[in-house]
Length: 130
Image (cartoon, rainbow, N blue to C red):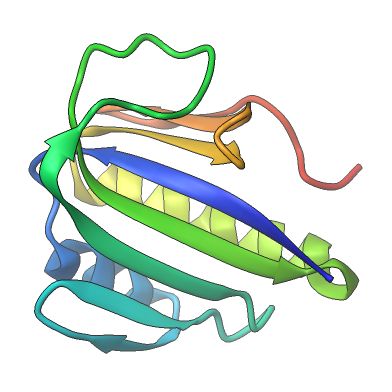
């Protein structure tokens, strides 16, 4: 069984910037013209990123919908490695916040908000594991 987390990033981020953050984590991935797929090294958590064309409204519930989403991502984590996957996701989001100066949200199935990037840093609002 897996858990899926959804990432929505403001218009302006590129897949190359996502790849740059992943390279710093030694993640395995394949970068194509309109998508990026791979796995984190430590947790083997699968991820997929793609451009949202045309840009769309934020789908995550309970957030201020003041920007358009230009890139979406999903993280699929096995329940058995949830703690390791959450650690990898946090490292990735911290690196993303340093790399780009755009807003983003990480949610569980667009319902519960777990992290928010405000253009300068990332805040973790919930933990996937306790």
